[in-house]
Length: 352
Image 1 (tube, rainbow, N blue to C red):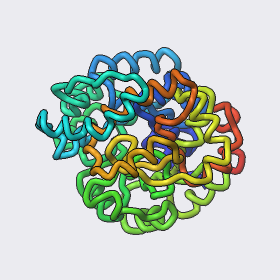
Image 2: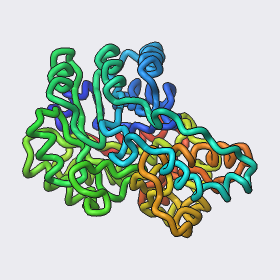
Image 3: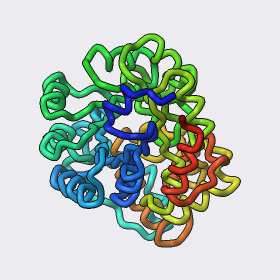
């Protein structure tokens, strides 16, 4: 039985949300394909400056007239990454220097900011007026949430604990995304450390659906129709899938990552701060091993991501996955589909 309240708020026909990917992993083709098939396509724009956000929204609207979501990170720098000193930058560089030397990469200059400003980005969201604005790592201000309501933008906030879900509800967020630790990608905790906020998708979804009045979307470790069915049976009005859509040809990931998702490597996903400085789940590779064995405390987000980016580019050019962020959820071994349309057909095959 599909929940009409959730579908109405998201303005979709089917309770399927394609998870938003940042860093070039989202594509207009993937978003529009999912939206045109009745689900909610999502684009992670947290890495883009405001003009890039406007451009992406325009391109999506050229491919679909259906509902879609744009996603931002409310916290764009860890506290210790603000006003990052030259001395701290040099200390962070020493962790990466041997890898850069091995690969023949020059040391990157320290930027004024390591990541676009959320305060600037949100103005682009309000200007472009996507049907849905989803966000992670915090709660936007009352001014922003009120502006979204005035403009008819549905807000979706991510929670990794019941306390975070209650905070989102108290703030007036329209829909709560319940994301369990099985999920690939980042753990978007904002009240406690991510390592202390590791509840599974199913119990977290049941708790939030029972204790909060807002509609709930379940996310984390869902890759097939059975997973969607389980989420809906526990009180979710929809299910969000990241890894399953990331594995599709329409996503922006590289061949090495996609191949790893369909290999035995996908059975060994782990939580790590190696990719960006924030806790995320992905498949083991040389990057994780090197960061784990460095003996140093890793830089905060997004400084870690800044140093990893050239290593990732070198891996892509070399055709290996040594230094790629290999995001994957715990159910990745169940992946079967490489086309978004085929995946959507499978996901909706058991729905009433």
